[in-house]
Length: 168
Image 1 (cartoon, helix red, strand yellow):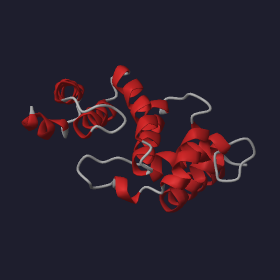
Image 2 (cartoon, rainbow, N blue to C red):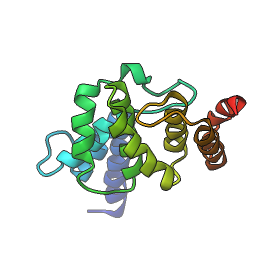
Image 3 (spheres, one colour):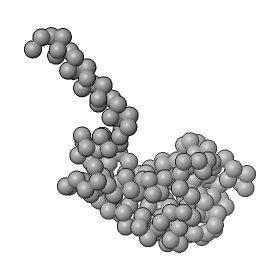
């Protein structure tokens, strides 16, 4: 083959890949990395993605799932399976599980997870942990702890904790 034909073939392949990715982005990424739904041995990836998407938190209520809309019956099981292996989003999966447990009114179980998140300096986990002290969910009411952990959450970057501090 002549060099010009090789360059033409490579250019066509690149253009096709870019256009395909623009149209089917996540599906192509999953296919290339072997994380598409149904891939053998990738149940963890599917569960992780389902947990993170099904419990997505947004302090501004823009992109996330409101707590009352979490399908807790499904998400508790999915998030627990996703926690079988640690990865970079491990704390976010735990946060999602805690939110699902709160929706299921399993406050003691949620409180244990939120306590772990507060110790690990997870900003929104710490903010939600503080709220448990305010409402007495899974623990006794303690305005002192509520204020302490709301302040910590704000310092960690959970800007929505600022409104909680108005009660302190």
